[in-house]
Image (cartoon, rainbow, N blue to C red):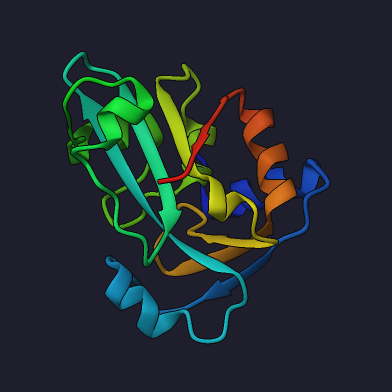
Length: 162
């Protein structure tokens, strides 16, 4: 069973990671997010769940306002042609629904099927914002703590300038 937001936040606490979570109206797109994020400090991000031509899975995480070049990306990450993963595959592997894609969902990827790809500029920022498994909340986490979270999941991210 995928974790709930409450279980995720409890897990972060067990790791000694302090976060701040804000509730708001659901945000399914960056545009909707811009309307509800308000004055939440830190970098707001978008997440792309992708599958390549060989069946490998990728979670690309970048600042919300950054344009991701999907034609250049496969060469940068060593992937075959990329397409968006289906809602069914997203639910099966990361345990979230479309619109709630988040790197926090890597905690549900027990078989390490997904390779996270993180924007290097984003990872150099002090505070990052991601949905805590649902798109009606935003959780602010320090980038160093986010790295600790990823290490605890066993995922090794590729960090590149996207």
